[in-house]
Length: 341
Image (cartoon, rainbow, N blue to C red; front, side, top):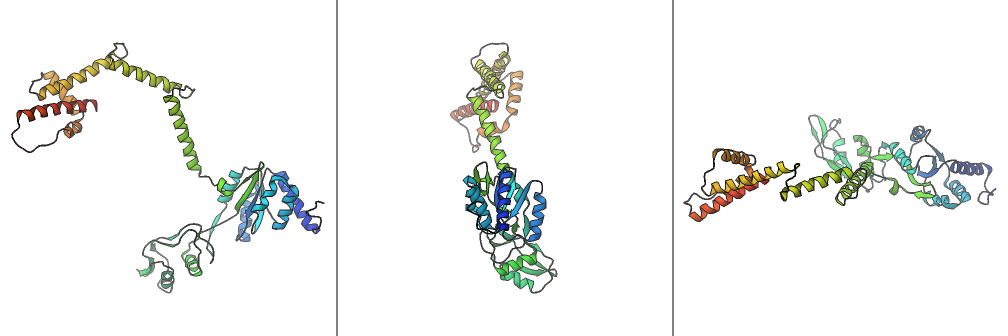
């Protein structure tokens, strides 16, 4: 028998051996906190974990003996076995185990002296209570209660205990009467040993939605980087070629290079520029032929807010020749803005 257990009674030695077998037969062993869990809840948790994980309740001293006999990295679990601890054995990874244990938790009423896990908020609205001492009891703990329509009503939403504060007896009693159960009760994973590594809750409590969103964002940014830096991959080569085609087409249009694929765009651009010039000429008093006027009117009608925003209203007074000239130029620029956005 190992040095650590040679002095132990037989039943304790058997407990230690059972713990060691559990550790050796599973890929993960965890230390969980059992404090404050009713026996009925423990049985409920065992049923939920059946086939996935096994909970072994044992004294902390026996857990310590077993871990020390195994030695190596697993012995560091002793640093996390505090309070009313137990061991959990499974072949799942620690992230799945943590999530599974969180799902087995249930809500229970708060006891005096417990710490609020979150802000405890009492919403406003009617209750099922008839007028009586309950009104004073609620008011004593800061809950604004009143009688309305023959029933007790909470007049406004109230935070009675903030996260991290201790719940006193009066508040606990009031919460029980209101049916508020703020305490999460279940196995709390203190640490898990998996593949020669210790995992603590701060590493395992992952927001899966945020994690997935970050992956999607990273993929989008990698895609954009590949396209903009012209680093072809099977996923981005199509987008890179498409971007190059668009840029080449734009160069061709701006430089008026008459190729069959872009000549229509060049003509369209020239048409728009002609209409801008026509609008500017009209502003200087030139008359437009019917076809040009119709085309120019249709172009300006396509984006009237931009044209209207470009011309500020002036007080009604006789315009000078200089003002008329400026107004014509402004109209011309407005037409340009309307046509080119």
